Length: 332
Image (cartoon, rainbow, N blue to C red; front, top):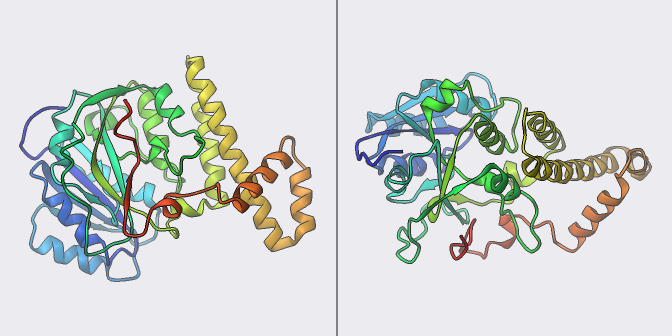
């Protein structure tokens, strides 16, 4: 990254039925002097999302709208934005999230890396309000994050809800992505960020991270990432298994990838068990649980965790009207 203050970032906003929050997201990106353009990709919305995007674009030449005729999913929509981007760096902004003031300046002034990430502030669904914009007690200090640390940061940690580093939304080098032929996996609707970052690491990218918050993410229990559909977990598991096939993969990285693969497979089996119980009854679900090696125990564990409310999401642990950070700023 460089310390230039000129517009250097293409902000990509993929959206579907986001008329209530899209305007706020766009305006938070336009407030950053480093934003060269905001590319809104409407993923075949059926509400007023396109109308909102056009209204924002009417008063802001930096806003561009790409309207898709059929729903392609968030990964494919983001790829359309990446293909249309013109600035040296790209940043993804979800349509119900916002950039905190000064975010892009902080990241662009950090060490020159292909990925520069900051802390995420989780907030409840508040269309008209926002979190405190300043964090004077959290310095914008950067440290490099290795692939080993990144994968390990996505493993379940006792007593932690939704702490995965895959939630990070780094500013990325467009030249690196294009030069390496890297894009989001279109088939993914869960974990597509994690998958892209891993493939960037495997292609030689470096990531730097500050624990100062710069991205505010809205938390809702009904969000796609909270539902973890069975098919989406199957696709994520398959992608992790593909990562393990990378040539010359260090053993410390491979060990953590194998652990993550097991976690995702166990989540998938648990969801599949519940699906079968709803559609085919208890007998069909039990046959599935008994029909695979090392399947019954993890399913029983997941059921117990559900009953004890241990499978918490950010929506479950976020205090009403409150906020929390993805990463503890006191740790390094």
